Length: 369
Ligand code: SF4
Image 1 (spheres, rainbow, N blue to C red):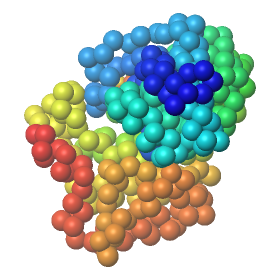
Image 2: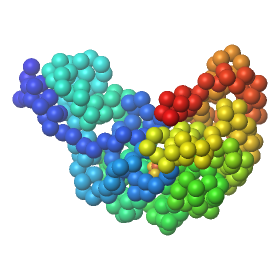
Image 3: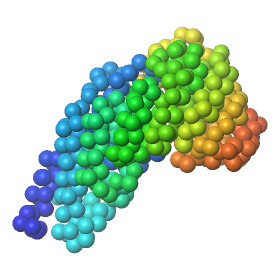
């Protein structure tokens, strides 16, 4: 078939020739296939947290702004080529399953082309959101980051939300005007791993940041206009330190009052120092009921107007009917209104026989040890 002087085979060949850097990790709320994933740096510039396996063994790479902009141009070229094929096939520029089938019929190998697949899925979901990878995009020099964000917004105008991971430490180090400049250039939301608000635990797990810096970084980001999503890690203190973990996390999050608070219970991953701590008995993990007690203390201490979310499979406690104890949607429980409801759910979980909380965490840990 020919159109615009080019055959479909030629257009598929052009799609094969276009690629850009995509990393592995993104938050579940950027999941499915809805978000465009784009690497602005590679791996983690800190990479020392004892519980984290995400980028271990991988060197941090600071990508030059011009290289990232070239990647954005390639995303736009893939978008334009896919749209051109849609028009050529009489689909009016729509990106849907029929178009995907037509493209794969011409070039079966495209199914393994992550650049093509990412852009195709992103477009078929409306092309609205992007997530900038990897672990701490705020490490970019502010002016370079601003240039990249402006180019992203100009080149891909369908975007309505751009988000990324950030470390509190870096946010605390940035000047307020730098943060505001980055936000105004087009970055909307920051996903920040708080893990705990307890200084002793932060030092033990080598988070590389203090509670005061976490609070300062979170507050500065909110003042600059960002939506802030903070992740905390139930059971990070194990049986010895659960109480200080819960109390100090609640007070740190209260001091920040982020837009979102997201629970990510600890899972000791093979290859991490924390996995060894558990294997050698230096860290004794809590049982499902003990973790619910910890949750009750943490949640009870929160004085926030945040959304409190359990949007991960690791939060898989059950209720009396065997259903999920907590809603796992991305918008979570609206505080303060739904705080009593959430505390009631925790009480219900505690009333369920402990053995019924067959937890994804238990299964993963036992299989690995
Ligand atoms: S800063 Fe984040 S990505 Fe880096 S090692 Fe710590 S938890 Fe992992």
